[in-house]
Image 1: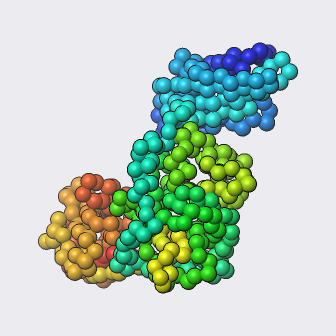
Image 2: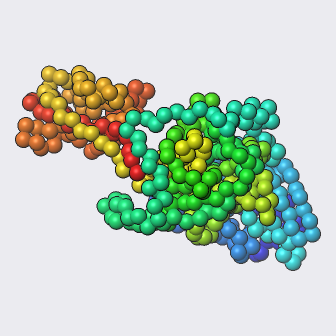
Image 3: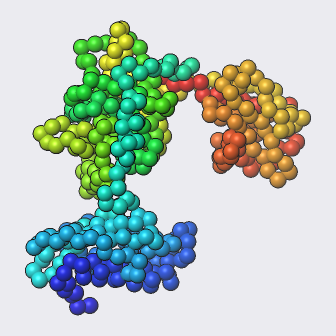
Length: 461
């Protein structure tokens, strides 16, 4: 195929969209109709076609258009009829073109192009979910939320069974057992965090910020050191140190304003300490750009590191107003705690990513027979931890039916102690009432058995 010369950046973008869309139309004939129609030969064919499109329209050193060249089962990422150019910023040798495809999500793409000889070539394609200029928070809502933050906001007591002992998380070179292997903790500096508003947010930067709330307690505006505890190259805990000369005598949960939780959800393998005032002043597109450039881009380039620093509203040589920590390849919740001095003032803020915490479990044995089918187990421990559990089902199937977040596992044992059924062996289905741990066997003839139930009663460091 002859090399295509485009004399304007707009024509190059249109040609790329059209070319890739035609490849997608052709791919439908051999790729299958759904995400489970995996054919390695077909995928190889698709990848080769995408490689040809990349070579025809991009500069040789350009990164791959991850969303465009990744196969979409239901609709193409780029569509020659639906994707239209909405903005062009062009100079002599460089151009940025924004497109919108209202039929697709993400709906917006930003194409960066370079003038090469008499041709224009694409150097980068960035997807965005929000239109240019849309604020992350309207000023009225931002001001209302920030007004809830106070330096003397009351803090709740620790829940029963919880022993944060956060200082142990930062005991450098302490050896822990992780998945059966002895592993050392390593404490490293993550730099200095700029907190011009004194209001702090703890949030996964890959998540939407629609539900973002700052912590209820504020600190004196300033610049504070941040430390990480690293295990096998990933952050296991992070802390901001406000008074390095003071000792923590008590740990208290660090909830968000308006009676929120002290748990921060980790969904995209990162967690950030941010100045809440700076963050809430961003446009949505700015937030996306920070996440792509500061966090995702280094990962795609195989640049390793324990954290990324971001200047949301601060500018060098000022310190960054966001520090994003690389978490392990998992999802879950980080628990946030204020470290308090004897006088009640804040010494530190800790985010415990929880994957090195030691769970505290308690197990009970309860006699059981088929006469108790579909009858909840009565035991003081279950009552104390608000757990309801029964073994139920029919001739078709069986399951451990559970209501209560402190449930860990259950096993049904015969009179000699052999395992008849295990809640961890089958799939777990969440319902509006709780969860059902399915068992393949039908257990309608079980007699004189014992139900072994394990309850999570907390954790400690």
